[in-house]
Amino acid sequence: MRSKRNWLNELKAMGISISIDDFGTGYSSLSYLKKLPINNLKIDRSFVKDITSNSENRAIVKTIISMANNLNLEVIAEGVETEEELKFLKSNGCMVVQGYLFSPPISGEEFERTFLEQHKEPAKTYL
Image 1 (cartoon, rainbow, N blue to C red):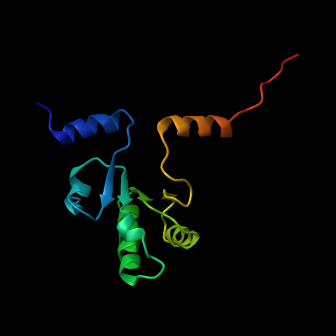
Image 2: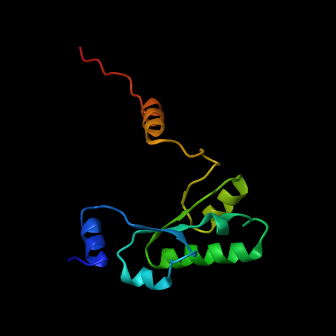
Image 3: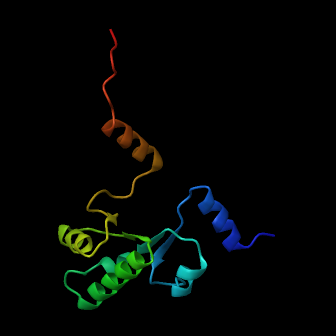
């Protein structure tokens, strides 16, 4: 029987990115950063919320971003809702975000339809 770590290593070898979701809450642990073959840390919305007005949230988010960058992990901020939050995150090295600032949650079918509509290329004509 394969261990979870071996299974994750196999997935990573296939080119699949592995993320720790809701980092900093629940069962996420710093030891996972060493033990697991992860690519991304997702900062939980509870830390992103109020980063423009809460010094503790700002400190936690800055620390997570710095740690992830030093470990060569991509950091993703969840739940970005304001331009001010986006500006703070970008200025601190978080280049990937998700949240209502960009779109509410949508179904896979709706995402596919929207993506295809936005990436239509005119048909090329060869004479």
